Length: 489
Ligand code: GLN
Image 1: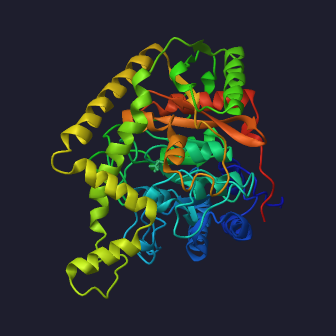
Image 2: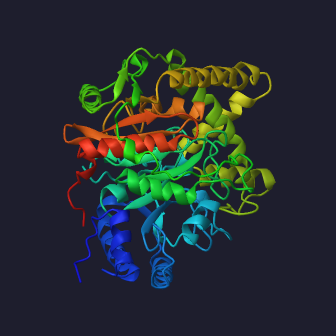
């Protein structure tokens, strides 16, 4: 029997499991040992679910024996702790939900379970997914496996860090303004924000309901395609999920980069972009062109620049409504010593929420208040429509739009913690895509000062296949996706 190699991808593990090279149980046990060994340096998990993982691994072994295995049967996966899991606490990295144990699985986790995946644990994040560094977690920050003094990005930093560190081959995150793509970029892996409506949000803790989407982290396009294939599709329990068939997400793999029309908007290469990131992007564009892609530098997205402004009206507004439910009455943290209902609620919310969450609630409440609604929320919605139209027009000319994922590489812990604006600017290039609803992928495309750089490809609505096909083509001509950080534990 060959040694169990934890650096394998999910599809490599799947092949090994099918040919009985090792069992799902052995894979789960080895994974748990590695993840536990990495935790002191990474803090990528809020809860490691040993018992659940071993139970699921045994079920996977039974399915493998019975010949009923799919691509995720027996594959270890990390799940962002924003996704509700039956019997496993789901904290949203908040003191508010520190001991909250949901009575049901969210739809996405139900689908993972049905596919035979093995949940290793619930990964760390910024509280309620608000942040770009995973420092706003009530459970301490996650660290970047490339440099432990640096952040992994956020908000899905735990999911990104554990995949980059080869703890698990695949994981799930959510992306409201960049929370999958930006940490994927800063950790040197693949992250895919799905089209709004592609994946059910039922049972996922809500942040900004018109923007939130669940999506995969992986080390290559094949694994991302397999994971997306399992979680995508209509869900009658989520009215915003699209009643569209789920394609085979590998359908464009054979095409490669040949003839792929790539739009490069100058608007996304302006002020604030680090030199090292810019250089990696230019080198990548040359590699794409040398391998058959057709580069078009004439597309423009001038209004997309307003995306960040629009987002910081819309997202906090929706968050202030979604977070009204944490009142200490039905579930979650409750202060308990209030002398009356008002004091009880104000102490509960004052103590249960962290500073960034409070900032968002105040921003949103202000924007929605009487007399300001038209000036802020309504205006932002109008600009949103313009941004959407711009993306649609550009994607009439090209198959994908290429931009940097983040203007910078991983920054140092605490570097931007006291400067919300500097933190928010991390998502300058990812947020417009959420505003428009389109899918976007981040792919590793080089290094700057030894830290990974990500490039973002933006596609037409529901054309994740095009993005994954381009990603697969990219992997055939580069080896950035094979670069690994130093072993951590
Ligand atoms: N960093 C952005 C924010 O703080 C986006 C977060 C996300 O996508 N969940 O809101």
